[in-house]
Image (cartoon, rainbow, N blue to C red; front, side, top):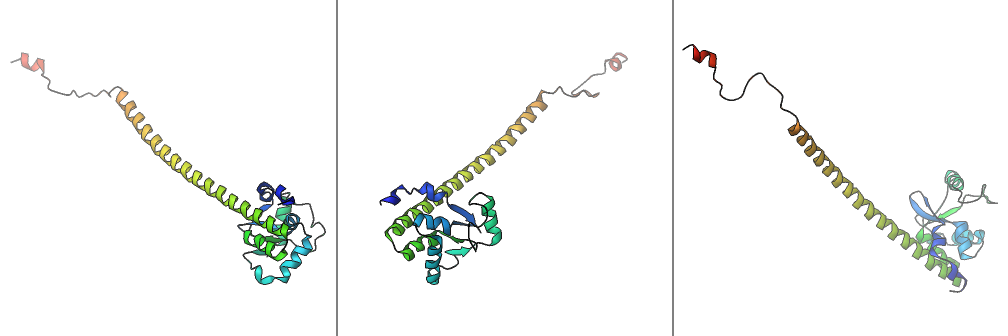
Length: 180
């Protein structure tokens, strides 16, 4: 790995976007990483349509492209493009390395796959942490309710008993007993 040794997963990860619920990379970003022109990359894809089913690659709509541009993913306008860019999933990006068939493409493909794997692992770890945090919050909430109930019970015990006109227990009416 000569020049691609500098290609770190962090650099690749910065070029991964979420579109239509899929983590994808845009054709121009992949062309830059694979060190080919974007139009050459797209031509290679069009020469091999069976290798790029819709779950490997799709073309962005104008609205999706506008959203990505508004998020400062790329410069304003299409940058000389006549069409919206293509988005490649992890499998599509890897398939590009076999279609482009160069040493650089093979090396870059490996880095891209490793980056997607690292992202999946990070997401899995975050999901596990989120589940544990939610469980702790539920436990804390039930403990808080139990503690609040105990505090209420203690406060009720601390209150002075309400005075009633009726006495409790046996009482003798002394005035009645004197008259006998």
